[in-house]
Image: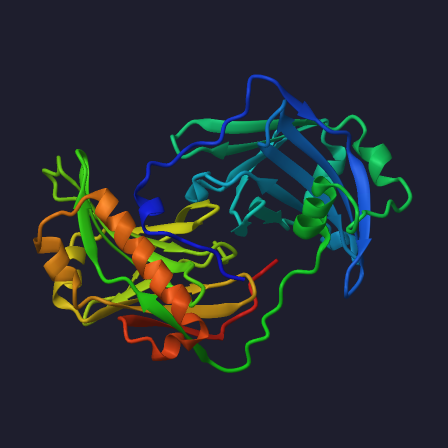
Length: 364
């Protein structure tokens, strides 16, 4: 359920996915599978780099009501989420938002009226996205055998004993959407690393981690301040686990200051990042006791993580430690938390709290 989101990972420069010069497209195939609620079918094709793992998949998802058929697209992690993706079908060049990101990639559901009809009539289809470095990642799909594939009889997808691709296709395209089991608010205690600061030749970073009893990171936060900073621009970067509902902007609240909202910026295997860059942030962080970040999962649960700020000002104004020292501290804290195990509620080290409550059911 929970994935690690280490503080140090938020400090590393983004690496962009990129297709090799040669990419191949699989034939369109119709795949069906029984889920707990229904039998679901998709007509799907992949464009992948030759000899690599980078993959973009497009699927037409059939529903009991044919007028509500929709397109689902899976793209690599590491894309600029705020720009969404452009789906080009002949002369139609519409832009759509991503729905969520998971370990297999980022997913967009396109449910516009008559979108399925447009896809069935298209001669060529392409998906265009913006990489982290600002360049374009484009995957082109021939529609030559699409109609033949869609008209085929049911083709059962092997979910047991099948290929890794079969398993991914089931999880991403055919499985039932996750549903919340939360009925009332509950809390998850997290071990709090405290705030620490280190600088390199380009910037200074003041950050923290919140850890589960397993030692895995649940949340990370870091204030990034460039050294060449004439305009005094700073970014507060929050990292949350994967599988959050991306169209719903997370909200940052700091004692006595107006709440801020911001989009998810980018997702990697270690989590999804949100950047806040209001000019008043530093004063708020230095003068407040705590801040909270609220976001909605794809299951519809509302997460609110409360982060202590009592040690932030001392870390910000204090000397920088080395990156090696930060890593060593994180390693020791992780080992200590693991030894505490399920007794984290009684752990004597600094703690923070994650509140989980029933939210709303996100749109498909």
